[in-house]
Length: 234
Image (cartoon, rainbow, N blue to C red; front, side, top):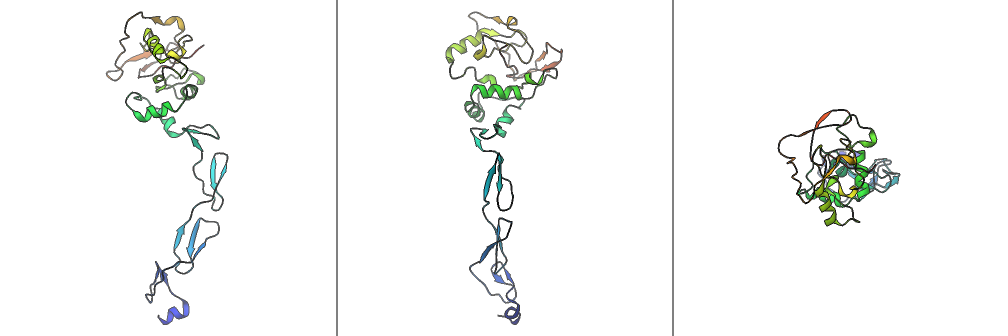
């Protein structure tokens, strides 16, 4: 041991003294006040320790250092405290195009949400039609992938869905609200729909080429994308 180390103590760095080369194997940790960090009183090394989380509303806050963690308590893609939906759901309902048939991640999200939740999300989502009131705003989403809720007979609903189409865009009506039909996007009323008996609906290929539709309210034309209509009862 060098004389200076005897007088002033070791100059520890990462477990050894940079002056005399002495080493030590064990740290003596003490927590730094107001921080989730502990410091070795021998060598000065610092190490992070676990936060002490406390939840206030939808905010997780450390009682020691004040750091904020995950702001929501997620249960099935929704915060059980404030009702906010997580990023996966928000991204889905704000996407310009979604593939609900082959994308298993999207299918999993949709299957975890009930029909009431899907309707609420669709109405809150953004809308390409500037003339629509806020309550009518929707977006091209996967909402229509669910042609029936749990109380519907899927086979009957599927058959009915084939027989009712919108003459403005060729989209089939959401069979879950078949009796009360109004299109958020183009404003078609129930008398605008027509029934096709015993024939298959030849739906346009939404992925090839570009189709445009005109808004009945303001005359604005917009590109028509898959699932661009959501049908609502009066």
